[in-house]
Amino acid sequence: MSAEQNVQPRPELKFGLEGVIALESHLCMIDGEQGILLYRGYDIDTLAKHSTFEETAYLLWHGRLPKRQELEELTSQLQAHRALPEPVLNFLRQANPGAEPMDVLRTAVSMLAFYDPDVRDFSPEANLRKAIRLTAQAPTIITAFHRLRQGLEPVAPLQSGSTAHNFLYMLNGTEPDPEEEHIFDVCLILHAEHGLNASTFTARVIASTQADMHAAITGAIGALKGPLHGGANTGVMDMLLELDRSGVDPELWIKDKLARKERIMGFGHRVYRTIDPRAIELRELVARLAERKPEASKWLELAQRIQQIMKREKNLDPNVDFYSAPVYYTLGIPMDLFTTIFAMARMVGWTAHLMEQYANNRLIRPRAAYVGPMNVEYTPIEQR
Ligand SMILES: CC(C)(COP(=O)(O)OP(=O)(O)OC[C@H]1O[C@@H](n2cnc3c(N)ncnc32)[C@H](O)[C@@H]1OP(=O)(O)O)[C@@H](O)C(=O)NCCC(=O)NCCS
Image (cartoon, rainbow, N blue to C red; front, side, top):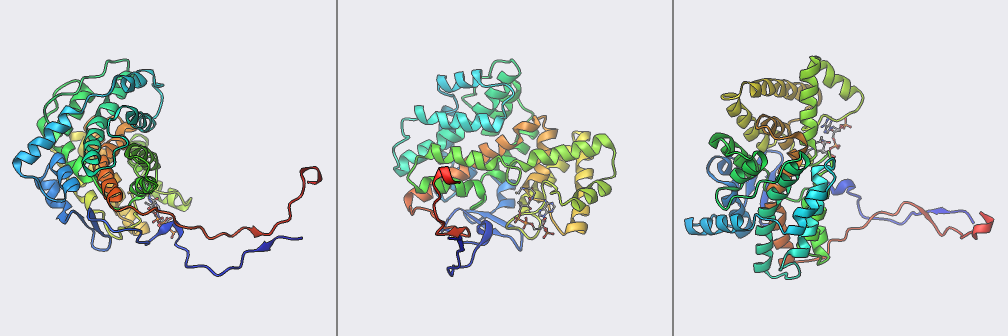
């Protein structure tokens, strides 16, 4: 008997779940037409100008801005939980120095579950404690691995200062310049949350099965790594460096890529139909860096040229990854750590979403439209 095609009527297919509203969230509003991004109702531009990463974390986790004492308490909790359990540090010592930092972060975060006393406690209080610990520990994992792969000892985390300060200190082993620390802090704010993007959705899908927070974050890190998501920032810097080194005309280079149907990293977005407001903030940060580091002017000029070409050729605007790349590069951060920085900042948004998911859970389980054959006759193996 021949196979029949499935001709059952079916609901409208939303390929890539585009435009599908899967849940309600209090965390983040994105107006893709107007280019507006709000965290808990606060405009991203206001937060970038006036807030700090720690204050933004409080806002996302608690739904309101902290009073001074509340901010101090959260800051000291984040400082207190920076150290890693010894077995996780040992794993970093043994990890292949050639491993991708995102893979190392993913595995180390997964391991943290073995040593977190609250891993199986899903109460709001325990979830917040885990969110704080994960946010505090991620920078230590990233920087310790980076030191170890160079044959250096990890720099022990400070028991003081901001997340931005401590990250740059652990990365380089020296006190960061205050202006660079501030710029990095703004980057962390800008990356902290962004609605139901692919990695956050992944995290919520995992949590919706009532799996633990570490399992959900491990999955989220895996999803963030891809070049269509957080991995794009490394691709942007590859492009800027290639254009700079080769001296090729950016216009010819881009037209050639587009003619071959290749994607230009850092452009386009599933939700924004105009410039990503975070790209505007990050472009300002490159300009700010250019005032003190001449090499940043080169990247700013080149990036702006590419922005104009992409607008003209494809009517596409830059996304968050386009200008974050030259910011991190100018700050002296190794390119393969760019996406891990995205992850350490997004830890706040991921965990805030997980707290929402656990508080009001429903298994996330869409369906696929089956388009394969039906009622196929089974042929015994000897007769195939
Ligand atoms: C982010 C992204 C995956 C969103 O994709 P999407 O919503 O699925 O959009 P589509 O793939 O439907 O793209 C729509 C059109 O724009 C084009 N396009 C989208 N992004 C593009 C890019 N970065 N470079 C070149 N063309 C691009 C597509 O080829 C398509 O053109 P076509 O209609 O002529 O075929 C996509 O823009 C992309 O790949 N960007 C590069 C990676 C990146 O920067 N990711 C970080 C996102 S924050």
